[in-house]
Amino acid sequence: MKNPFARYLLQKLVWYILAFFVAVSLNFILPRLIPGNPVAVIVNQMATGGVQSDTLERLYSTYMKEFGLDKPLYVQYFNYLRNILHLNLGTSFMLYPGKVKDLIGRALPWTIGLQVPAILSGWILGNLLGAFSAYKGGKFDSVAFTLSLVFSNIPYYCLAIVFLYLLAVRFGIFPVGGGYSFGTVPTLSWRFITDAIHHYILPYLSMVLVAIGGQAIGMREMSIYELTSDYVNYAKNLGIRDERIIRYVFKNAMLPQITGLAISFGTMMGGALVTESVFSYPGVGSLLFTAIRQSDYPLIQGCTLIITVAVLTANFLVEIAYGFIDPRIRAVQLGER
Amino acid sequence: MKDIIILLFRSKRFIVGFVLFLGVLSFALIGPVVNPKNPFQMVGGLFSPPSDKFILGTDNLGRDVFTQLMYGTRTSLLIGCTAGVIATSIGVTIGSIAGYKGGIVEEILMGITNVFITIPSIVILILLSIAIKTRSAIVMGLVIGITAWPWTARAVRAQTSSLKTREHIDIARITGFSSLEMIIWEILPYMFSYIFMAFILQFSGGILNEATLSMLGLGPFQTVSLGVMLHWALLWEAVRTGAWWAFIPPVICLSMTTFSLMSMNSGMDEVFNPRLRRS
Image (tube, rainbow over all chains, first blue to last red; front, side):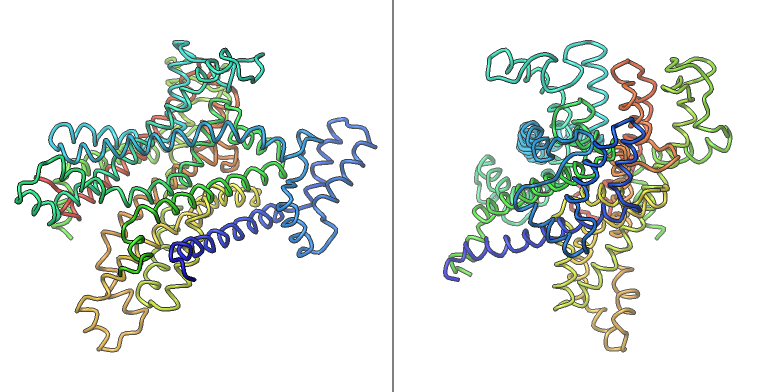
């Protein structure tokens, strides 16, 4: 291929598509390892709940058709793939006949709105803090480092529970959960937006503090490595001003941190999902929480699928950005090396 | 070996972590022996606050929180340790073989590793936990371990690749060691400290993953763990009813355990990577 950047992109894309297929296959195969016929199990559960028998029959036939459990496994697999490509994620058990696609579609904007700003701002602030404390050293460094170590090791949901209890339940400064007040309808009115922000602060805060801590530790370490390297000594001996050297150091230490951003999208996911359910925030995490409690397999599968897609997409975007930023990759593209 | 231990105990972070961890460990191991009660037994009223009889009160079903906390910490440590052992073993095996062999073997092994690094591990954890209906604590540790190895594999491969170019490796190779012997006798002993640090990281990650899964409702069966306690607190609205004794103790135990492990890890980093040790 002529354009080297396109080649870099294509290479990355192939990896991501491969990862996506592995994830989708796991998503297909693992719930099918549950002993027994899940459709029969769920219909039996409903039968004890006193649902009429003709409704049960209709339920049974819907799910048998959807899962295609009467067909051989490979046919089921291709059906599954085709359904995913058509964004057909099946029908929820607990909210029958609600479509999984619609349920997730309603929850997803909340999750993205909470997590993307929290991860990005935590990343930026954490890097600034880490670089600054590596440069400063002394008291500031040891205090900042210890605080970062403490915060980055408190799981998100633990901080979330403590915040919820102290700031919402005990002192009543913030609402006790949800994405907006009970009884209001999501509109673009000023009242709704301030209300939503009021509900947003605690979940955001509990995620961002942990993210800042984790990033600051990594950035501090990278910056210390850079600060003791030869080019810094050389620049110092040349009499170049400190601010200038800091800029060089920051740029170099920053590169691995960009990969760190990609990682945080994947590793923060689990904790972020639980944080949502702590605050009953109307996102994918809370949806997953109820789906697991109700053994709603189609909905669980839909959630895991959408989480995979979201994380892979975020990682891919970061990789593209990395390709633009890293001078070594750029150099390879331009044929300098 | 003796020198290393002396050096380790010069690091303040290591000492703090070590002492904290010993505290948590003895609470979890000695507690249930001294005070053998059934954590599932209902002994008091619903959500009764701490008193002389129940140091940390009771939960939504009138069960003693302090007893739960001892057994829960023990289960969480067991799961974390199992996960740590499994993840570190798989990671070290794959990483050292890939790094030492190189070529096509490395390409394939690292390809698999990269695919599993890209897929968010929480997704595989959720799916595996759903597929396994009866999860004991050990099974849960296994499940967490087999999803957590890729990072260790990647790091160990990098270390092995750089160790491979040292002279003692060439000398050993001339004496006719097989690849396996080379890895076991000439590579792994030189990264013992590194592997131990990886284990500590995986241990702490395993405890956190247990808590995440349990809080989502996929915890171990008929066992209490720190995550299970938090799940109950969420499910029965302990937070919103203000029953702080039902969730603050497990939060503290969880944070203290992971903090102690990370502090030990960071102290070891200081000792083994002298560049980080600034005067």
